Length: 633
Image (cartoon, rainbow, N blue to C red; front, side, top):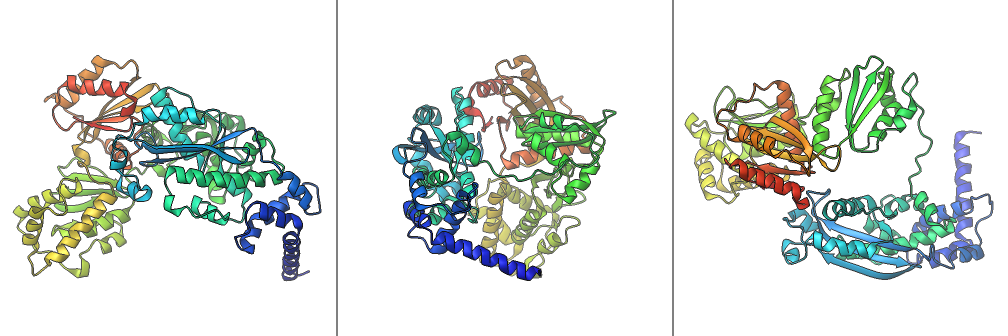
């Protein structure tokens, strides 16, 4: 039989099965019961077809009868269990540097919504403009609302004892667990049901599972006007949950345990261990499922490979159980590995720093060792390379460095905007043709040749924009640029548009702030445990000293001595920096650009007395609300 004929027969069989299901009384009964009458036939079959096929697949050849469907749907699923459908709005994607702005929960029991609560929360920080645009929650709306420490206890009491339900539940749960632990010393570990995961299992033909499209596909009323507000989204999720619970009844899921197990993704047949690997599989399975660093050693205790991961066990398992040909080829290089060492770290920065140090010592090069991403923007008023250029590494040469950027394309965009607004010598990233092409002057326009004495003032204005000190409406800067360009070269209208674009890119790439080599910081981050703290002293952008201690027992005298020695003593001389030191500085700079703070940071702008610095340091250690903040002294 030809493949084409077989394919045609399969299509006919599939069509016959579809017609059989659609014409069955059970199909019509379930469609009416789930309120899917208003959606078109194709969409309804996309939801109910796979469901009824599964229902008939438990050793039965005949489709489900209407009587059986009625029996299964005659009463709600888990009538004695209360579900708390939760939604929160936040200032960003991860605690503690992002905070909760709105809390809402809808209680569902016995197939009905029985209670709800919602309230706004003052996050004690500015709400980013993109979040305001998304949620509609402004600083003015939360100005007189209670803070999270006041609002959270009552909210946790309201949902206490319930099954925690949310759409993409890990997001909401992580925020609540973090702040319950850090602000209230309260454990929050409820059973969790995720409507996103349930949608993946129950609706295999659905292509997208965001809340709006999912509710539309289920024929729920349009709630677009209240989208991205906590109560409205919680109410929509509650209605989705009620539909899903009925679907689960059709599959015979009648216990909470079976429901929680069903939502887990079907990962299929796991790949086999790579051929020739001598590492004991039990050693992989014993690794923690935490964020941290791992090291792989051979029989001679030589470090073969080092890496970092948010889930150490999964990352190592994927290396020795390769899922594709490329991973399989790399696994062949790990055949000599005998031992795995793992270190859990609660801080993104601590993980990045330790992983960078470990990777340098490993015999197999890790691609993540390139810490500068797309490189740095370099500004120099003199020397061999005056003007604006892009470099891949930091140096101590009197220039100012901004970055690192994640991609060279971002540098190219910024170079183009700088060249369009400022008549400065510009140099594109080496080895990047696209950046050189895009970094030229628009329309081939050449900047006027200026006396060398005029470049420092232009560079100072550019630094003001990059560091957020000059507004795009600054008339002094505009007059300076207009004189430098000359009206016959660049019209005032075009110049203002170029300045506005430059400001937009600076904001989009989060460049506002001092250049890397001007930073004087004390960074305090969590260590291996919640109580341990790693403290990093940064002077002139480079790591000058580090120390670890228990949060409740900081070495006050040692810290005060180091503060005085590193930041206040005129005799302090930092050792000559090596290329590795500059690469490590790039790790710190990249971390600051990405806003991944798990502890807090002291920004020393001036010569503050050691006692004042220590007061701020110990005060922040005692205050859980200091996490995720920068304290400027």
